[in-house]
Image 1: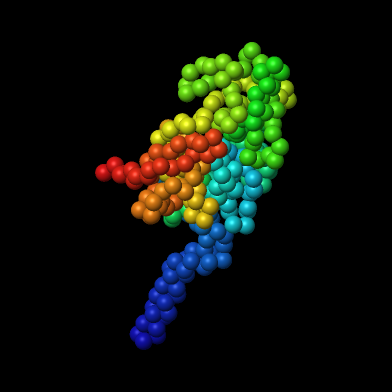
Image 2: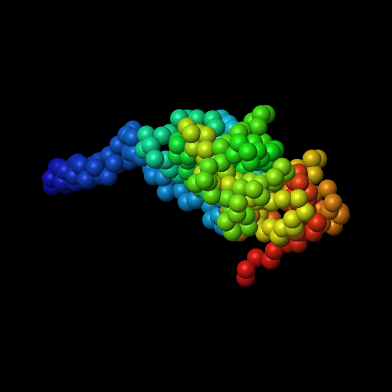
Length: 283
């Protein structure tokens, strides 16, 4: 009898060991296999883009810094703006093979930005067409006899000369205008074809003495130079505005990411802020 009991105990122990062994094998396989790498990739791919109000920054790419994950953009109508990006940022281009490092310096880009942890972050970047160029600059002179317009581009030390033809559309405050209204000191936005060096459209943005109301978010501020860059809601452009005339109370309202309303005047060289007020967020 004792021998029979001993045999049964040994058989039960072997059966229990056989059942328990498979339960530990998945853990051993997971530790040794590639599954943790897959899980990490899944977490990264599902990371959500930061929310909040989206502002558009359009300009020329001056530098792409892959080490610090930053884009340096010279914004149309404004100064240089640094925009952070990471693996969540979407890149759109007509060339489906375009990668971050393949975007050449000098490309025209449109960047949808939001404020993420106090910094300007790129949700998406769109590259412009190679045969389309847009620039914001200031008129140096217009020679009506030669139908030639010379514009000072902030990106170039020398003026850019473009031909004005009968098909060139001139727009002033949303209304069609004659090329004869073009004069030195005007701020303009020009769409042109580099191959022909012909202006397709000239939009007059400002002339000396004009008053403007800007509303949007501050994307950059330089208190030393007394200037800020504002993403203007009405035309989705970035405007550089001097803040020399503001008092201490108004200056204390200025910070990156703040939604503000700015009353400014164009003096023939730049926009000068006269008053600043904070725009209340919707409840």
